[in-house]
Length: 538
Image (cartoon, rainbow, N blue to C red; front, side, top):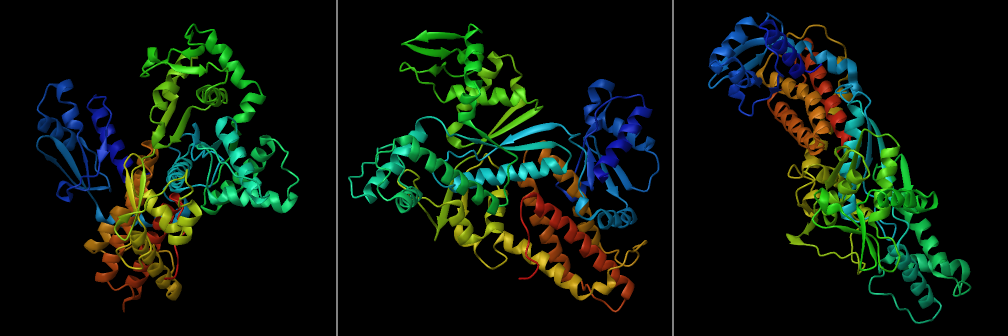
């Protein structure tokens, strides 16, 4: 149990003794002059008790039972209660980290709640680019965090293998293949121009020469789908991003789910015909306009199978579903939730996250990219240039809903200016010490020799980890972990600069070794939650 949770229980038990029922929230003040932890419970109770908040705060303080956690507690205007944690308790708690090792920070906060997390879901019409890379980082990090705190997470990739974009893929490959067979190449305006299309055509030519010229588009489409989806899976695996389920859009047509949902929608009296097209009244449920389900040429829109796909997820019994969409899908939120509501399901179970654009910066200038023309930087290109750890950290460190600049020069710097270098350097320093002085690696019952202010600062940061992980998972903000890692590494570097680890006093040396071992455990646990395997040598 974290210190924060222990304090919440202490305050809750105190107000219960006073026959008061109110939710208690404990926070870590930004200003350390306001204690290690603080609560606004007295301010919350002002209306209920019709008393001055300072009076309430002092009453609560007087009734708090003696314990070994709190060194000092005080009321500060206008009614905050600030707690200072006992230093001996901070030292005693160090062994909890050393005992739990890679389980430190784990909890059952999620109580095995079933969550479906869908991310990346890039059309298999090309290679993964940096936008997909940001979504992959966010989705994988969130899945790791939610699993760590006790949720039952299914990681899902939706394969858009039906529809017009797949036909355009088949046409593009065939045109490139025709070019290799010395025929004219006419890629349509909405076709695909990436290098991978040329490679695919070359593979077909190498296997069949000109024997596939009379094949229809379906052959080239299937060749492209198999090759590109396999490449996407391998790239994601290389990026330490794995999925439990790959759901095919085409399978929703094949198993009848699309038609079942269409039939259900028609029976809701929320559909109508206009201009020979079938519309759904999503505007009645908060969408900016009604949406077309079947176009006037009889073809289904992309919206219909998307509804069917989400209804299939509801059918599978998830208590919460999280979708990670690109910035161009912002309009999908209301239309999708409207359709779900029309079909009688709870739209609050669906949480749609929109990832914002990424600008690549090199030599202080933006690198202009375009998927349609084939001028892109793929996931593998980026990893080859800056490394997996740097790629994951830079994407992990920013909130998903903010646009970000990815500075390629900074990401490759071998200096403390580069945050991932700075973090890995902390880990490498610790590993070097632990490897060299492993004779001191013995469990200690009582810590008596490292009672310096720097020690307590680090201990408080270590014990924040449990709460940071829960906050990151509950609020779906994985960047909180990346920020925490950097702060912890900074504290270690500062501690290392001011304190000798190896001293003439063997007991003190042993205690310091245990301290930095605990730092390594928490540092590595946090890094694992954002998919980073830190170097042990620099």
